[in-house]
Image 1: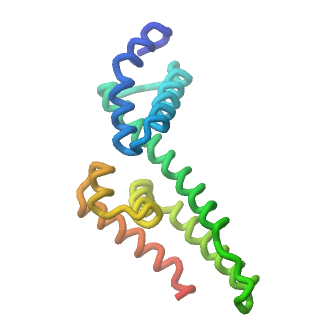
Image 2 (image 1 turned 180 degrees about the horizontal axis):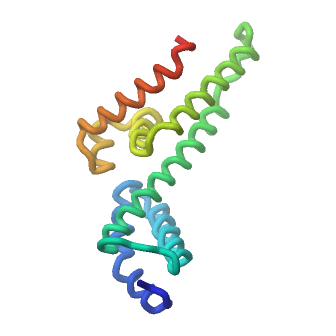
Image 3 (image 1 turned 45 degrees about the vertical axis):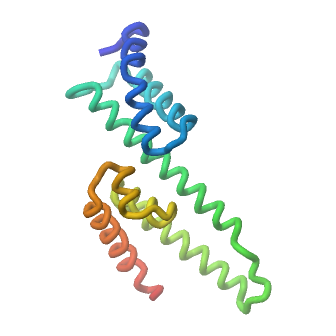
Length: 169
C-alpha cells in the first residue's frame, strides 16, 4: 500500500484533515486532536509492512481514529479519578477516619476495575455520563449513536456494577 515515504506522504496529505475533523469533533481540542492524528499516522508508518487494510482506506482511518479517541478518554478518565482522590478532604473530625478512608479507596478501586471490564463502547458511555457529567443527548451526539443506544449502554453498565457490588449494599 505505502512502502515508501512519498506514497505515505500523499496518503497523509490526502487524509489527515478528515482524521483531524473526527478527532476534533469528539475532543473540541485542536492540540489533542493533532496529537491523536500524529500518533495514528506514526502507528501506520511503523506497521506499514505488516498492515492489511481491507476496504476503503478512509473507513480504516476513521475507525482507527475512533479507537485512538477511546484510548485518549480512557487515559484521561484514569488521571481524572486520581486527581479527584487527591482533592478528597481530610477527615480529621470523623470517627474511624483511617478505616473509612481505606474502605473508600478500596471501593473506588473496585468500581474502577469493574468499569475497566465493561465492553469498550459501554465503558466509554458510562465514563462520559458519570465522570464527565454529559447528558444522554450529548453522549449520543459525541459518539454518533442513538440516545436509545446510550441508554442501553448505561443500563447494562449500571446493572453490571450493581450485581458485582451487591456486597456493599
